[in-house]
Image (cartoon, rainbow, N blue to C red; front, side):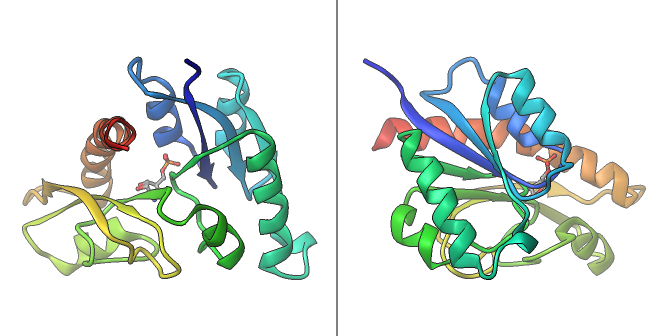
Length: 188
Ligand code: GRF
């Protein structure tokens, strides 16, 4: 039986993309990378893994619905059933949500609902609390607001800098995201 097909959406470095791709036990095939930053490092990573890419520049389109229609077309052409957001710096609009809501998940570097949005690690670090963490959640129309699937706490140490905290959060992300993907796909 052929594996379920999935896409990763990313805008940046792609360390989570790499972690997903490197999981030897993933119950799906990552058949497409969707990226909105034509110079993002994740694009070369996708090519190295032999993953097809759909790269777009939002400035070339009049409105979100126009580029999202092209994204959905690329997803459907690839028979993609699941979408994993990994540092995709845009909100999903109605066009993608109509096609994939309930089958889109995201990873965010805080214990949501605390510190949604950009620079979540900096926000938590500056707040001066004792812990932060990582959340994997379903996507809805809000900013990091969809139903939470799993969270893991990361302590903020007294000698942490934002950079050391970020490194420890990334280690958790790279383990947690493939694990949650395995669980979800085995449960459906
Ligand atoms: C990760 O921290 C992820 O939680 C957030 O964006 C970052 C992406 O990092 N949504 P990378 O591109 O996977 O290295």
